[in-house]
Image (tube, rainbow, N blue to C red):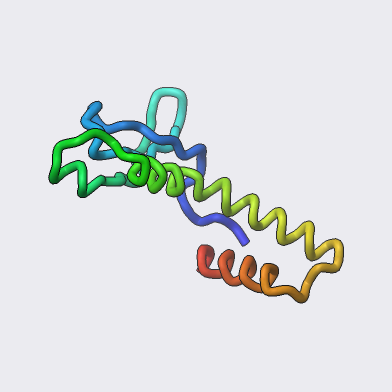
Length: 102
């Protein structure tokens, strides 16, 4: 199974310093970044406040997706190598990876 999303390290970038939008960016080369996604905080857009913890947590979760995918895949392979094949956790991990890659 292979991650089919944009290759590279995904990182957070606060859009224009406004705080209600966080960009998820990936470095294409030394001089160029590309936007993967934007995370908006509806509460903040309505009330013109700064970033809240939930908004930041959502953006961090999205930015960590490629690393989480590889970690789950590696853990699953290691567990299966050691004979752990028949558990709910193994089944759920396989289902998650299938969901991401199909």
